[in-house]
Image 1: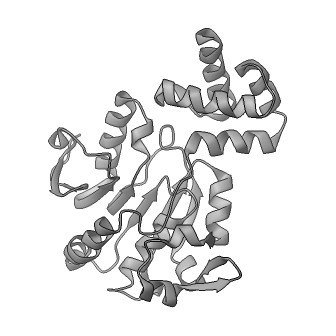
Image 2: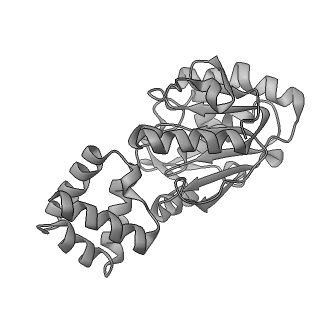
Length: 261
């Protein structure tokens, strides 16, 4: 079974460019096994052969692999820190912030960034890059329709201002949608853009191996301007932040204070 999973990893990498060996094996294997069993397959080999011929099955694989669990203002007190402490400092340096929401899933995170930033600058001036490996998730993000649970932590004034309720769903305002550009991007394989003032990457790195995390922190550091901020998830504290050129300034916020290469 171990050999078979190793072969599956190789085949997936060759076919899609996704390197599953950089994800924690026990978690990934368990999730993918339950997916193929649910679909009536008995092995990784059977599952791979079916997946490359069936787009729906391939999308289900991507969904399972990328854990598309997201909501607006997730861990709301951290977003309040971003709004009240981090953004005012960044905006003193520039009114045109370059922002990246990395592994953005179905769009709740970049849209939250836009809502928070709208306290300070007009929506027409906000530009956010949002990327994810899962095209299915990106399509949902572009549509911008969400269930009530996704909006649990949204402040009431923001909910009234930027959402329209229809039946049991909430539709996000077109003006917010226009602030975000969605693109497909593989964090573990694709090159990063540079000169960002703020990178938000939350609740994703916990699924990667230590080796992959180390490389990603280096790449995030390289992608930030000096004084730029990396905002991570609530289980993703960076130990030895200084080796990546970071200094912790608030819980889960790291400022780039030096170039590392």
